[in-house]
Image (cartoon, rainbow, N blue to C red; front, side):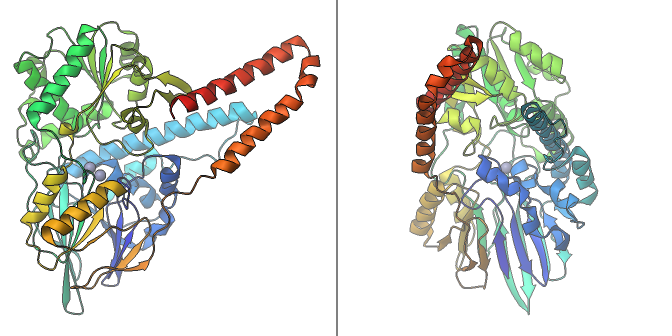
Length: 537
Ligand SMILES: [Zn+2]
Ligand SMILES: [Zn+2]
């Protein structure tokens, strides 16, 4: 039996593990790669998955980093069933359509930009990753499965979905594969939630297994407790309220937004939410997802606020802005307010407009409540960038930045270890996925020290052979994760161009005055760009 790591291997996004067993191929998840350009290029490599030859897909949950390439795989010929829980099916339909909409808008923007630049209006070579039409085909292939109900998607392969407590409908998978009379037990953790969260059930305990493929997003960190988390949110609110500015909360539309609303309700109960501070949920996806939460209340722990037909009675200040005009009105609105908007990593959607209008204001605050992928604007701000580029414009970061890990939908370090500790683990081989290198190395060491278990950390496109009772054998090594930047070459090109410019200056001085001013302005733009690069170093 073989496992191919097609994503979330020494990175967090792009979850996709392809398994070859019983003469067929199937995947666990089919997620989108998110982050810098180099990582996002991987989204165009779906031919590697062999979409036509895949028998089925097991989807752990609706988040885009687990589901986001389904429309592309389907458009490239995948015709098999996609298994998931009922809430995941409802959420994923919404999320993929929203994702496709973003892809189409981005493509349109790039086409227009290139057309203006080149004078060629027809820029059909630039195509979206997938279209809304592609996304609408995916739900036809979804097959619903309930938690704790074992099914056989193919003879010799049995699968059980169990509650992962991460977001509505999220699951970890127990898979038993029987080949030549020998059974191999695999567990794929998907994304694991934290025990004791406000909305989700605690993650279930996994059965004994031979191989555990475990997420490691927060392998190097623990989260603060609930009280400290609420206090930090209250501090951000008090800060911007006293400055008559906005609290901007980039939040994943599914899960985070609903939990933040719940926390705001708790703060209002404690008298820590000013009565005259409006709260705007500015994400059509979040608004639709909240409706899905109401339909599946039996999957939630404490759904009062979310399922209330009369949320305004509990949180009178909350307003939902569905259309673009209402959203734009927030940009010019004066006074203190809380704005919750997506995307959670600030790489798409309406949140970028809110940052553009508020990030430069010293009295505002930006509250990060979820994981920020490498290369995303959110990660840059968390890392202390002095400015970020939004809509081809540098925006200074003067707002106060809060990073509140306690809202995370992911288990922290000790919670991951506890979850693993509850499994019966003699003979278990651990494979860490869905984490950055530092988090994975730290967690691997702890697993080794605490449970004396062998741990592997596969890289992108690595392939492993699995044989019960042995460590996974690497049969194809990983593709190097990042290409090395040749700084010497890059900077010597810049220097050469500057010296050429200098040598041609005397000709420039003879040109008509208007032309000289034009050239001067363009060089000033270059200088500004260089200064902005320097200020972030
Ligand atoms: Zn997730
Ligand atoms: Zn994930």
